[in-house]
Image (cartoon, rainbow, N blue to C red; front, side, top):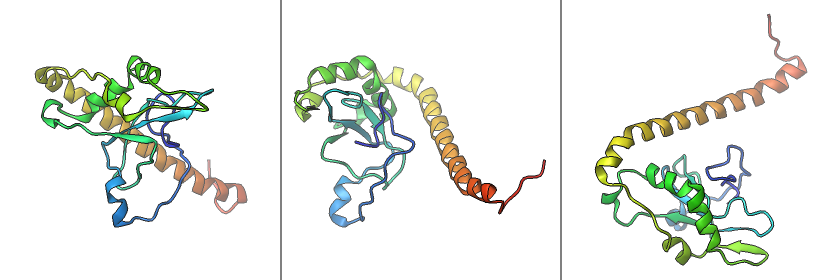
Length: 171
């Protein structure tokens, strides 16, 4: 859950927990394109409950017990998961999910509440028309995210060397 950012999506700088890869965990390992959904949040600060995230890398994340993996049973009706993700990220959809949550110290969504939520699947021809631009936007987002990570690593490597005088820059 610590990888899901408020408003949906993956955090760019999450806390890192390391789980040794084990054949027993294979069922819980997430892959690029999987959609996950936060099922728990704190009552006084509901910012991730019901918000989806789209997994950006294969074999990097392991599903948590209070995070739902959204699986499409009949994949023939949906051209790609991006359209489903965009619908699930809609503020009204998230608000509807949040309204179904049980309240206590923590606010919790049940799998039944998630399964009972309406998903509107556009006609296939509409999906085909929109698909190219949607996929293009997500590919650009992925490329930008990779570049940000590369630049952040470069900064983190060079800055200490610049500060210590080990490396200098000529202007």
